[in-house]
Length: 59
Image (cartoon, rainbow, N blue to C red):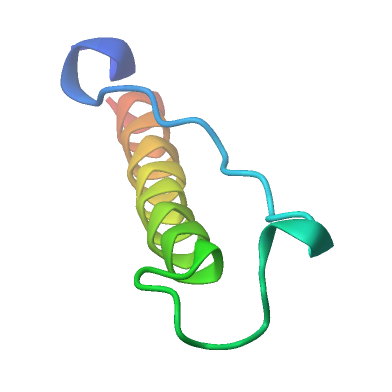
């Protein structure tokens, strides 16, 4: 089974630019909250992709 058939690709999120955050803490969600959430998804995808690659090489 290929990686592409088991995992939907996830693009690495880009950090918000300095002018995209007001710094006031009142935005819900803050651009940084969204970035961190998307980054966690991306990191999990990278970990799963690596795991699938390692498993296919041992078979």
